[in-house]
Length: 172
Image (cartoon, rainbow, N blue to C red; front, side, top):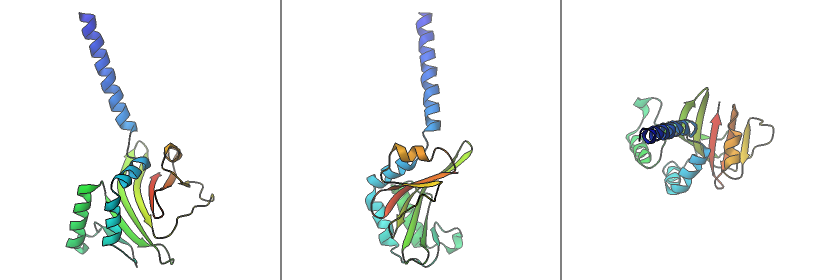
């Protein structure tokens, strides 16, 4: 009887230990961002509808200066947070192209010695990356290849979700 209780205790602690280790390695990633987009496409379409552009300057909601934040922005952001994980959204023009960029930062966190940023990004023009960007890659699909790419920092990966939206992860 004692050996059965002992085996149960060992199995229980092994299960707890492995679950806690799994949580540590299982951080929010580019794959999670792609899943958020796929499950809530209408939410992301609403961002572009509510803030249609063209953007002339950099804007963030919530605003870095709370005194400059509007009630409309606060209410919109509160509703957004009820639907998706989001820390902030940056809106800005893409240089002098006339196109806009919306960076919906879902999660920023430190994991060990690295800093991670996971976003969904809208580009008003097709994103292209050449091989000159040795630490940054574009992936056609959001899959394990993209996730494996960012495991060796400093690196960043984009995954194409459609013609305008991309999942993104930077590990520094």
